[in-house]
Image (cartoon, rainbow, N blue to C red; front, side, top):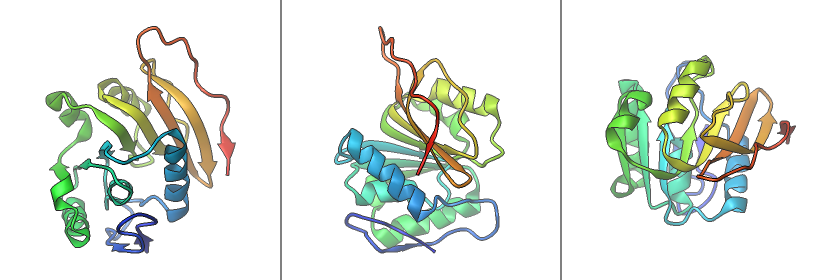
Length: 190
């Protein structure tokens, strides 16, 4: 069972698609992600992207914690229907948008930028998919979740990397002009 961990919707349950198509971020990993985000800055007023949204657990947690708006992108229509039900159940409809489509194809069409982007694709997401995604994504902070470290990309500086069981969570910030900082050291574990 998946629940919202903190904020205005704390304790509320989320519907999760059956089967192995969606791998919801565990409560423990979400708690770790949002703790790390809290150390970087406040989510209050943030504009967020939840790519590969699934049930919407990451984006809905961000809304519960004060994000101003979340755009959810989910290509699988039955999963997007469950996401819509979760948004409606939490009464967050006025603070979000749900896009049913492929995030890599959708991003260049929008020209939108985000304060925070959650990218939690299926574990079989290929390295060249990450390359394309990270090259098109305009966000200040990236939270990438995978079964392995995400391949390095010249537009991003990894600021933390943690392994929790079979899940690797990397946080990165967008490189800006004149940036000479390199990525953080090796992965840690909690």
